Every structure is written in structure tokens, then in C-alpha cells.
Image (cartoon, rainbow, N blue to C red; front, side):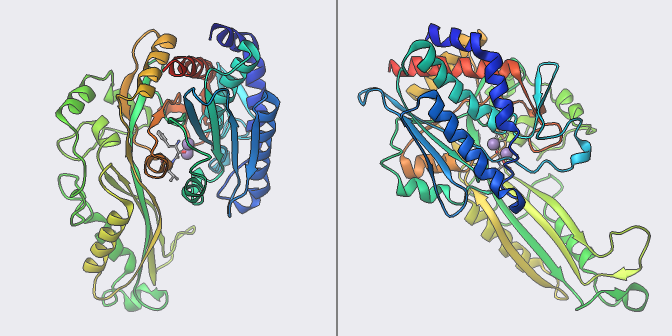
Length: 455
Ligand code: BES
Ligand code: MN
Ligand code: MN
């Protein structure tokens, strides 16, 4: 292990240069104009794995973007880990808000700025560099490693569950390891044991069959925007709880132990709120900011449109109003269940003057992983070795739906060892990844592989 750690130390600048090459590929999965680039990122990864000396590397086709699968089996009697990551990225828009071009990475004050720097190219690359440090620095991996890197995470991982089912034997491992979450704070080590799920829908209300003069018709024809705004406002009550019937029925409640742990975490909610320029936090009554953002379900409008939104004024009574709504779910809730409840709610409350169209866009399950597994203990010890203190066990508010499938389809627990920060601006302009965290991430993974290999 020490040889691997010192290999990283010696070659770290080159590791950063290689990551910069990887980040130059604009692998935006949601944009058909970038389909070639997404494939180029898959090929780049496969080539890189081959150069490291990984035994088997394959770019496996799906009906969407390919899955890069690789494995290196040193000894079938040793533990096997399945490393997952995603090589696709979010669109960089709005471009004008970037201080440097999103696909022309730059280093400023020790941070590497680029789309995907943290989510997730920079983080998955730590696993490649940990493997290289063993293979080149210590001449061998301490355990068996399988890699699975997908190109559709940012658009809902449509083809990955089918791939897991089809290749169950190929993917057999003792535990899945994912670096695609955040640390609790800068320099504050943590391991994530909970993720939220997602239910994403679109709702359209249609009133008259065309846009109307608001002077001629206003007053007797109900306005779809007014009606939709009222329906949206009614989705929360005065306690900031979601009013959908049965919304909270299957929520697995926080345990008293979890609540007291949450309360003891080194978290400054004022600072956190000020960082995003908000005046003050606002949660469901009875819950803290940390609970509200990571362990309680939510409902948020993601976009709303209709009528006249151009320059100047136009007196129009629009024919339609649209909204995109997503719910963050917690373990116990399922996307199908919540989508059905949302649909029933809108159908029940739609005004008699309106026609409703309800579309399910996508969803994913949340996850809670076993905090006492051997792999968790190894991860904790590994991070303690790097950071000098035991990592906190935390929940993250984001979603990585495939984690639930690792359990359901492959029967594997997952270790979520991520090194991002909330302030890394993933999905936002000026995404970054601190090079100190890139380094500590590689070191933590090297230590994890070594400790876990010893059982
Ligand atoms: N890496 C994120 C998820 C994440 C973010 C976990 C922050 C923990 C902390 C992932 O790439 C992501 O963005 N997931 C999407 C869900 C997906 C179904 C589009 C999300 O959370 O919105
Ligand atoms: Mn991610
Ligand atoms: Mn993401």
C-alpha cells in the first residue's frame, strides 16, 4: 500500500493532466448534438483502462450510450469490488455565467474548473489512478476489481438496470463502490449511507382552444395560468408539508439515533444559507435544515411556462399553462407510488373548466445502505487514515438511482465514498473539483482497497 501511495505522490501532476484531457470531451448525454462526444468519452476511458494494464476492457453497447466494463482478477479467493461511475455530464448552460470555458479546464487556487470536474469524471478517475498506483507502484492489485462506467446517469440511467439483470454473473462482487457524492464539508470526512429518490412529472392545463384577448374574454373564461398557479400553491400547507394524499405514508422515519447524530454534526445552517444568497432557510415544520435536505421528501416546481413571456406587454388570456414538478423521495417511498398519488391529486383538483395532461418523465428509488458492513468499516478506516479523524455517517439529498438496483438486482451493498462539496457547483456554472480532494480521494481509495482486501 505504501508503494501505491508514494506512486500517487510522485505522479500526481500527470494524473491531473490526464483528467484535464478527459474533461475536454463534452460528453453531454441529454444533447443529441453531443452523442459522438459521449461515445468518445467511453472510448477514452476504455483506452485509459487498457493503458493502465487492466486485464479485460470492453465497451459494451446498449440501446443508448455504451457501458464501459473492465475487470482485473488477481485471485478468485480474494474480495471483489464493483466500482461504478458515470462519464456523461450535465449541459454547461448558461454559458455566459462561466468564468472559463466549461470544456477547457483551468486550475485556479488549487481548484480544477470544468463541467464534470466533480460530477462525475473527476471522481471516477480517482479509482483509475488508485488502480494504476497499485499496478505500477506496487506491481499488483490487492483485490479483484470490476468497473462499470455508464453514459446515461444524468438522463436517468435508462439502460443500466437491464444491463445489471442481463450480466448478473459478470458483475458479481462483494460490494459496489461509488464516488459520486459529497463530503460533509471541506476537510470534514464523511461516508454517505442514504440517498434520496426522485419522481419527475409534467402537468399541462388547457382552457380555451386558443390564446384570447384578455379584455374580450377575461372575467368569464378561466385562465389556465391562474388555475395552475392555484393548484401549485395548494401543493403545500402552512406547515410546509406536501398535501398530496398519502404522500408521507411509506416514509421510513428518521430514528431517534439518526436525529441526534444529525444534530451533532458540525453544520452551520446560517453559513450554508448565505452561501446560496437566500435570506433564511425554510423547511417542513419540525425538521432541521440537514433533515429537510437529506432525509425528508420534497416537492419542487422545476419550471413553469405559458402565455406571453416576450419583451413588453401583451394582453392575452393564454390557452395553456405548463409546469415540471419533481419530488425528492426518501427510502420507503417509490417513484411509481408517488407518481400515481400526484396524478390522482391533479385529477381530483383540476377545475371543471380545464383539461389536464399528466406525464411521467422519470423516477428513481432512494437508498439506505448498511453502515455496519465490512466494506463500510474498511472505508471508514481508510478515510480516517487520510483525514486523521473518523468520517461522519451522513445522508445526501441527491439521487443515484442505480444504488437501489445494486441491492435489488445484484444483491450488493454499496459504499458511497464521495469527495465533492456542495460548493463544487455541480450542474451549475463554474463546476469545480479541489485538487486536494482529488488527491485525498485517490489516497482513500488506495487505503480502502488495501484494508478491504485483508477481509
Ligand atoms: N452525483 C449526482 C447525485 C448527487 C449529488 C448525490 C449531490 C449526492 C450529492 C448525480 O449525478 C445526479 O445529478 N443525479 C440526479 C438524478 C438523475 C436521475 C438525473 C439528481 O440527483 O438530480
Ligand atoms: Mn453524479
Ligand atoms: Mn449529476
